[in-house]
Image 1 (cartoon, rainbow, N blue to C red):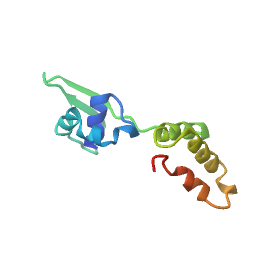
Image 2: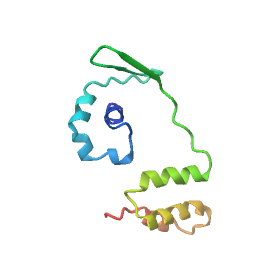
Image 3: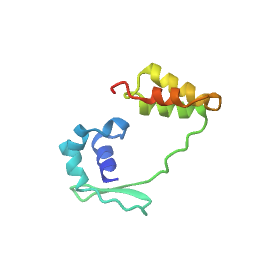
Image 4: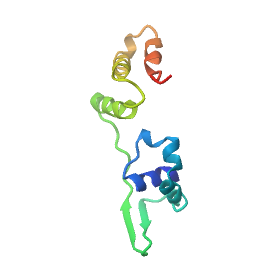
Length: 116
């Protein structure tokens, strides 16, 4: 959790691409990790600046995905750099028609990263 919070503070976002060796070694992220204290029972994200000023924001629950289109959009975002466009299309099509598949082989083959 400290890593995720540090990346979000450093970059203003957290995406699948942030889980790389380069980001793990980023000096700013490493420094922030040492300053992050996570408490799982808290309802607020609280940041204390060097000046002593405190900023607090309520922690919002992650939104549920509603409907097929939102699921597809989230998959596209997460798989975008790991799978090619045709691979993503094959996965989406296989999942959309999962009950009609005679074998999951086409799905698992489509999920293999193009860099393998």
